[in-house]
Length: 108
Image (cartoon, rainbow, N blue to C red; front, side):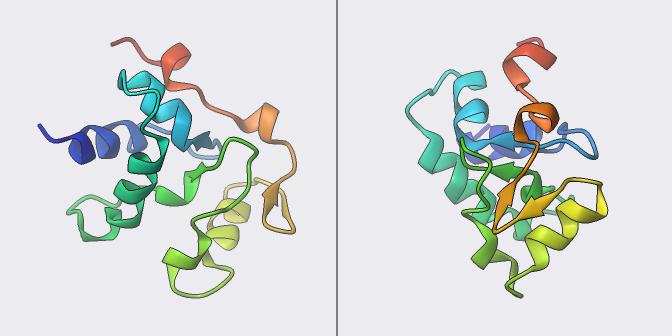
């Protein structure tokens, strides 16, 4: 299984109304310094057969750094807000509360 496929598997497990970071997924996969590769995987998630919820993956500060990969400027924010997540100025406001850490929530 490729690194991207592993990233997609983890992203598919992010619960509705929660968000995680590129780095948290990388750490869970044992590749702590590969947050950027997780981001690249999310940028390519639209070609996957399953609907990978890439909108739930943001940077370590809760900023929607990947928003320009969703077509329309506000699509990522709208998807998160549809799940009850508050976003202001491209940043999740209650990131600590909605943060989902796969290293805690999932077993390897």
